[in-house]
Length: 417
Image 1 (cartoon, rainbow, N blue to C red):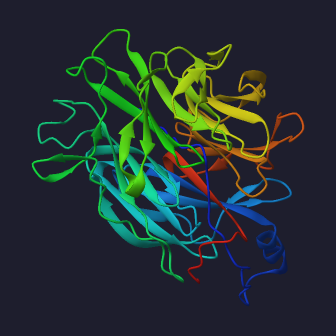
Image 2 (image 1 turned 45 degrees about the vertical axis):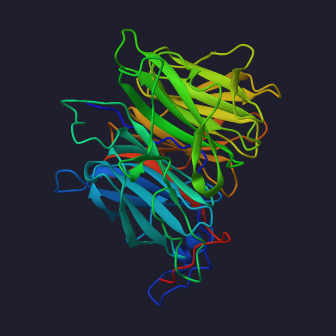
Image 3 (image 1 turned 120 degrees about the vertical axis):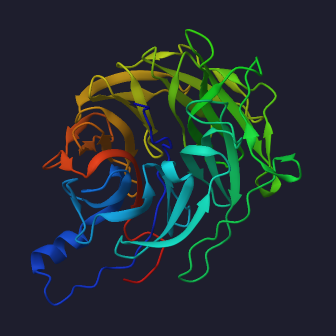
């Protein structure tokens, strides 16, 4: 089974107006709606009674207890097969879902009540998309294989990263995904940037993507599958005008054996990469040029098979899911970027994705693939320690893989229910 991880650790999101109470809504449910602080979107690869068609479970987080419950109309069809990654637009109006087996990105408009409305579908430039990230101006997608007719699981080739420009939303109309950026021309056609290591004949397998909060640089984690043991990399690109990418001078950067996830801090000063094979977290300082240099003391110990990472944008903490151990490790972040373990906390079985609520920055959740649950935690903002949210874990549809979140009562979105 090929593991799929939700990578993006900066979970940005939708704003909303107050929910209107219908005549059949009780006073108790009205109070619960008032206390909703965020909506969380969890992609599940298997809808009930289907093979590979996916669904999106939509949860609301209670601001007092951290309890997560699905909104009445949840789940929503993912509009494709095998959804494996998600991102939201920075205006909080759109959710982008990667349906891997369709080589497609489905864009949903987000209602003021958290509901999803299918809006647009675009094909990815390569084959088997697996990771996605968004800035105000661009949507980045990483494909397992570059767009060659001969590339497949039977005849693999190196992966690639492509860029779609995003327009500005207008009224209740979400942002528009534009024509893919021409990073490389092949026979006069659009071509994404192919990941290539020291040996061009080797197969480079991408795993995750992250864009600095500044939007200046984008990074893709990957490993060389042509050698044993594998060799891990971080490929770095500067983001130019119109979304054109240019490899950083020092790229690719060494990253252990098999990197699995990547995240950066709110200051665009530090980047962190989990290594699935070596049970470590690699920390880097990001220079103004975008080049990465190891933080003193890196790599830092993690649990077995770390799969996802989230860095709090308001408090100096980072959290890593350990898929084999079924737990999450909490770290404090020093001014140098160095990580120090705070503690380890049990999750559901095989956590593969993690997020922090964007409204208060202290509710954390993990997506647990094997037991079809979401684990919720309340983070102590002074110490970084975690407590289980009320009634955690919460059920999801089968095989959840990814998550994204939006703040309720934020400043974007706006499709009226």
